[in-house]
Structure formats: structure tokens, C-alpha cells
Image (cartoon, rainbow, N blue to C red):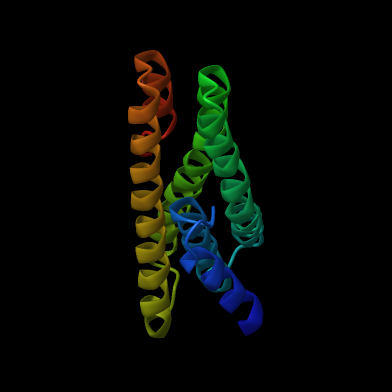
Length: 163
């Protein structure tokens, strides 16, 4: 486990690596879901958090792969490919944002059922989810500015509206 985590952190730290903010936001959401998963008492709640956690783990790699295609299109000077790849890449932080919002809602629901001695873990789960959402929104905003497409921007803002 430690080796895998250290390899990931080295990739994030390496100049020229496509692992960046999106991957970090996805990891934060996955950690948040995992922490809340162990505090959740209902089978359905555990199952939902496990699905979110697993998707966020997939999004860590997917973010890097999709962003690499954005850079490839930029270097090729292909504007149409750039726009398509950036929209595809923007889906990753949107999904992270949606997952982070779902985790925060689950944290609020769990507030009364989590024992006092585990409230600190619940607060950590919520803080990680908030950080993942904030990070994902920053990436989304940057991508939308880069695209300069008001209709698409409206669609994405509607999609990630806080619940």
C-alpha cells in the first residue's frame, strides 16, 4: 500500500506529469468516501459509498489520460480536437464534484447516528469531501474559461449545482 501511494505522490510531484489537481481531487473524494463507509451503519449506505469510492479511484487515472489528450490537441494546434478533448476532460472533475456533494450529504445524514468517539472521523470525511468539491470546481472553472462556450458553461453549472 505505501509503495503504491508513494508512487502516485511521486507522479503528482513530477514535472511534466499529467497527474495533477483532478487526480488529487478524485483521491480526496475516494478517501472521504472510504472514511465515511466505515462509519455508515446501513447496507445501502455502505454500498453507495463503495460505488463512489471505486469510481473516484478510476477517475484518478482517467483525469491524467484525458488531460494528456487536451495537451496533445493543443500541441497539434487542432482547435476542434482541443475543444472536444477539453469537454471530455471536464467530465472528470464534474463527476468528482458530484461524488463529493453526495458524500457531504451522506455525512450530514450520518451526523446523528455516528457515535461521539467517531465524530472526528466524520468531520474528516466531510472536510475531505469539501476539499474535493472545491478543487474540482476550480478545475471546472478553469476549463470553462479556456473553452469560452457560454451554452456549455451553463450546462455544466447546472449539472454541478449544489444539492
